[in-house]
Length: 134
Image: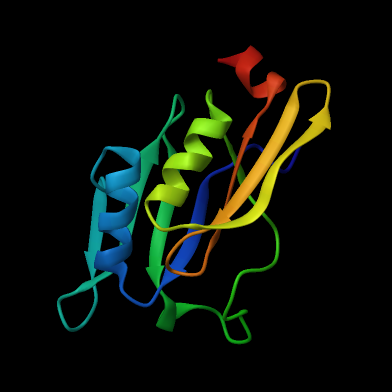
């Protein structure tokens, strides 16, 4: 098989330090890695999250590939959470805006998504397949 697993999810921010602080406040952990840009401010930070230390990277938007969308859109990466409604409520309380409400998808799969204050879509879900492997 050529796709062996999720490696890193990268999102974009005009102010990486502000985005890192926002995510650290939501996640309850500080980034595990930081790379400064030419002016000394963070150009990339990385969080290691969950049971498998999956990587969430925040990159300075000026390094986005040419033609990248400036607003929310594209594929949505969903993170498994144990308390979907509570997680969505916390994200909204922290300043995210609703993108897609809590939506049952059948057989225990339920999704929702928000747009973080930096313009990125963050998907969360309950996923019985993920929970079974933990």
